Length: 110
Length: 530
Image 1 (cartoon, chains in turn yellow, purple):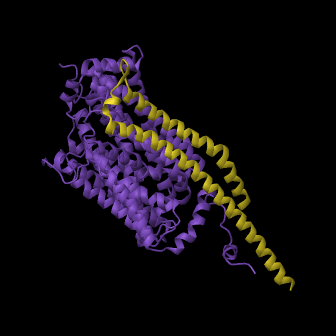
Image 2 (tube, one colour):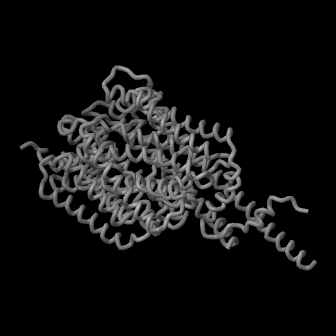
Image 3 (cartoon, chains in turn orange, green):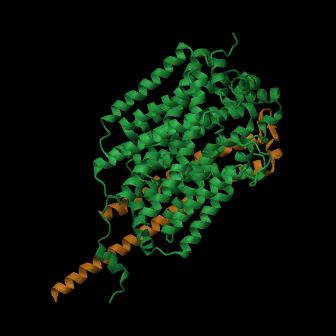
């Protein structure tokens, strides 16, 4: 009797902690995916705005803003800067939010 | 004596820089050879590279002679159109960071096929992935080797075949002796030289224009017409061409085997993230400099002189160096160009060798169970095979138009490798046959479409028209690979793969160290209680 109870009792505990871990991991994975998808969409919008203008409105990109600076060149520089900003946002988010959460789960698993 | 006689008439300074770099590369090989004793060290530098170092090495692995000499040349001749490449080559990096880098680091071992095959049946998936890897690597290698031959012949006035053999031999010594560690450090040295050289050259150019880039662009536009600051029809002819090329460049980056392989050299996901952050910073900075270098060459050297030396404009940056800094600077830039090629071909050959030995030999032929010594020996044999193939193809294809092969490599990477990798990481229902079909359809459709496109039919074979209108196939081949992967996965079932999805997700977040949940608990989890 005692043996049976202790075995089932331990089993339930492992089972519960495994379920907790699974739920926490699923949540964290979903959170990372959400951030990743938002930032990916932002990059796609910035880049394909640029590409679609090259494809379908070349003359607009040829508009001169001031001597030596066309809208095309300005947008090109903006695309480059946006890759820096977007990667920086992701790394800042991951280091501040994601990494501590992952570390906590890792410690609990060990 | 014309002012540009030094091109093809190497000065003592140029030869000194060149020999100095080869000496440094060999020194690194010797140093790394004593730290390369295991397969893990050979392929992944023992996971001991820091995030910053890997960021530099990624930049060194990625920025090929095509981006340094090719883009500067395109901008010098056609202005804005060259910048379409600069920007396209950069925008894939954030995608690599957001979607690929961390799962790759924690799920794989040496190749990206490790990640695609993680939940699926090893043999079919690895065979398909090897097709995807090797086709990208071979086309990219051919473009680099032929470019190297032409470049070194132009700069140092030596025989073409000798130049190709020299690049191939130094690369082979480097990899065979020092594996990934030596490759990494050559890439770091190269990135430092290339970024430093490009920055110095750009500042030197700007000093002629009161440190104002707009004054430089204005001067180029005054002499060559304002159209050089707007998109023309040199890089993309039709509208959809631009979109297709844009897709290939953006998503191709996330499917290049030699780039993906570098993520295994860092100790953890945090370092993987920081390495992409640094790589994006360095590569973006470099491509901003190409704006100044290209328009600088247009304004200071002039289109006529540039095309006089090389019709494709590839000598624009070296000529600009000579114009502002004289022979010593030309010699330095020539050595930088050589370093650039060496670092890229080493990364490519190493990833090709990993596909042959780790994916095909160890995991398909030996079913994942080969002794350590055998793995290392096969890795070195595969390296020799890749090196010899690169040298032979480089020599055989002398004088052929291979410029399209970089675009083709990116198209195959975007169509064969990227969709399968993405679905393997994020889609629970992805199946073995879905992966195989997606990779093969992506690779074959990219190859067939480029064969019937204007790129081959008109530019290479000289015909009047072509069956397929787009120069780059990615607009069709990449969606086709996604659709194939999805449809075939939905038609087949891979219960084991679905079951393993949680384990993969757990490993992506926690890494490989903590033990998995006890099997008993996992079973209990599925069984209704009571």
